[in-house]
Amino acid sequence: MRFRDRNNMFRKDSLIRSKKCKKCILPKKYICVLPLAACIEGGPLRERYILQQFHFHWGHESKWGSEHHVDGFSYSAEMHLVFLAERYSAESMALKDPEGLCVLGIFLRVSYLYYFSVGIHPVLDTPIDIFAILPNLSRYYTYEGSLTTPPCSECVRWIVCADPVEISDTQVNVYLGLIWRLTYCDLKPRGNF
View: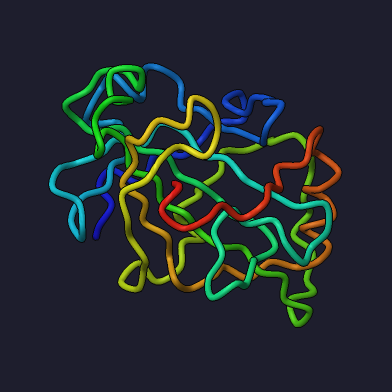
């Protein structure tokens, strides 16, 4: 699996508020002009997917919050990078295709050995490079499933990185202070994605 045109960073004006989670959406000019759009291809993917947005799912404390669980274990949070199949011009067109979207899930784990402060602020003053924090992309879980928020369409090729990214407890607490609504939900039974 590899990224192309990943030098595009999210600008400070692309952060929006959502009732369900923090979400960052690329401005339309980055989505429509292919050479400027970050995309993912290879691995379990049969085609190229273009990055649309990323968002985070957090619990109300640093012990759990990820939407995916591994052997019953939940991570502190989970970041989702949402990609649209290149053949579609809008997400609404991809909702009926089992592989219309690709979501790359990245676990975030609190590490108490990771104490340095990086000056986190609620407002983004500079562009951010989300690709700088990606874990090893050669180890992952993959399955065909659904969106985790309404309309919960079964249109997603999920790729969940096996290796988490470590963050500090301070970073988690800052992010938790930014959230308006918890995104934790009960684990769904198998086969009900």
